[in-house]
Length: 235
Image (cartoon, rainbow, N blue to C red; front, side):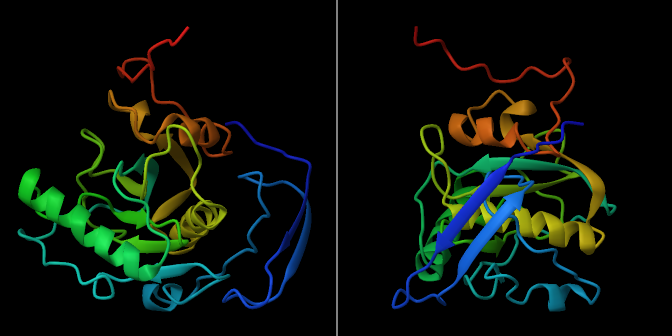
């Protein structure tokens, strides 16, 4: 497996008066995202405990985004799973919990009414606000990557990431969620990270985001027997 080592010095200053604490971070060493590494998150308690705010990363429950109930009884996976798929929604971006709650309901409506799925397809959706919005959650079988739904967890970023990356808050939220997943026993410690296009003929999760995912230490391509999306040449 590829190990991504980046010699990095990062200074991040969040000014007072913008809704955040005044903090300065200086980090040198290994980083999964070319950003400041998150502190290790210990989640030895139950899942409810792990849903509290940790390192400024928020887990937002279905109740908090006013989810509609699933149309069918849930199917559950055997945990832990070893695969994580990253998607983009190709819908609106959102930058606050209020905006993201609206976006979550729009995604759920589209998946239930148009796709005729039982519920929102993703296990989790990450807003550009850094919130991790619970879709089907850790244990329920999703509807996100055909052929892999019952053995993987999906995270979808709100927006389209062919030409840009998600916000730093959103990328850090994914990393935090992956750490929590391992601590909860939902993901194996050696889980494999994939882009949606690794398993299906799609642009998802967008070219820019996919380029970043491929540099992650847990990234692993899926075998050559899978037909994957190849962008058209513009040259």
